[in-house]
Length: 273
Image (cartoon, rainbow, N blue to C red; front, side, top):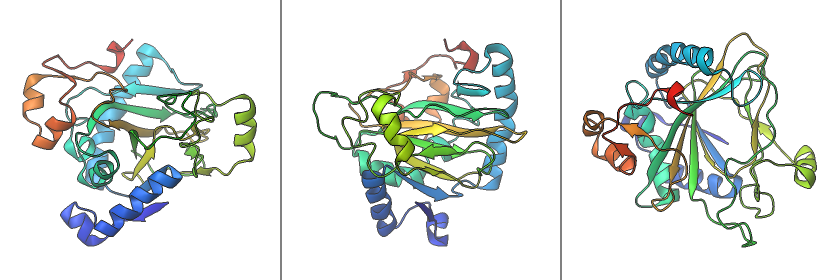
């Protein structure tokens, strides 16, 4: 489900209570919610103009790492990647705060790019369950925020998701790779491809089944990806943030990244192992 922001929500940078309630209900029950064109065209252009040459250098050094012509790339915590319209977007945080409660932290700043000629990924969940033998589905504790830098359509490798409960089934999430009986089930269960304009936002439960699909165009399809967790959960990656950069963040930005490696030099994408 996608929600179109009202003019008042765009102007104020705040969602109405009814919009928040709808979004929270969708994430809890179906695993995700989307908002169309949250970022401005200028913000998308700024981010993409910096990203494209960085990604080209990364793949020339490291190649592709998540399948044929497909790569996950960590982003350096520096402008424009550390811009608060991305890392602390108030529209996204209205929903994230309501779902995760006090003390939300951000532990992951990266990207997923399906290049021309990329193929299907395996159906997977980004995390196994916290307690695999518990036998019950737990409430959400970790959320992924995806932001596309281009319009996403049928031909350029949209994300395919399995909403409606795959994030809550304790048997279906005992491993991150969905195979065997679960893979057979995935082939007959309802799934949908997520089409959206550049600058939209998708918030999804990190446990929901999903996969990347083939990019049949001659241009990259890039999603920015952030992970927000409850205060007590640190899964993701350690982000290195120079002291000066951290001090320039808003109070909310500082709060989100307070557990990261503050005072360390920026880590470039090719410096990750």
